[in-house]
Image (cartoon, rainbow, N blue to C red; front, side):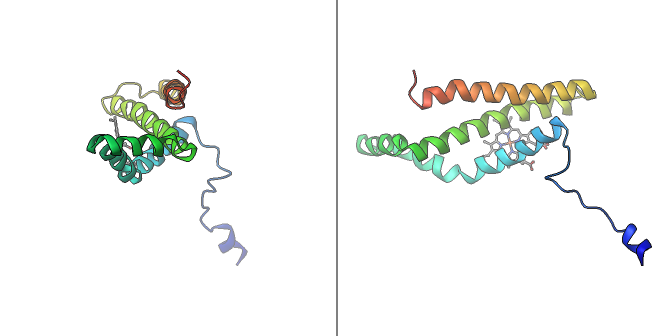
Length: 130
Ligand code: HEM
């Protein structure tokens, strides 16, 4: 009986597991892709508001001025930038560029840093800082 208990398969505890940086960036790539996909209706609605008429543009300005909408757009901005940078990294790895462990780790770090930096720069614009 104890032998059976010992041979039970172990399941990964995602909270306790020490994920490599590339694995972390990869999970965020999936999360950001799904987030972007799920938010397409909102983005298309905002695009439609921006194009339909002068009045709908006024509505758009009011909607986008709401802090919650700004927060959602900031999240989407990060999601797109992370997904874009990570997508480029994956495509490069697909053509055998940066496949070595150290290079892959460095590029994952670069993706996280660059996407956060670009989010900060463009996010400040979104929040009206310049
Ligand atoms: C133009 C920028 C984009 C690039 C360069 C890009 C690149 C990629 C690549 C290379 C993959 C495959 C990842 C893999 O092999 O594991 C992927 C997956 C995916 N992309 Fe994109 N993508 C872009 C934009 C988008 C947008 C705008 C959306 C959503 C509206 C999106 C949603 C997804 C989803 C849901 C997946 C599947 C993720 C997964 O199963 O892990 N992507 N993308």
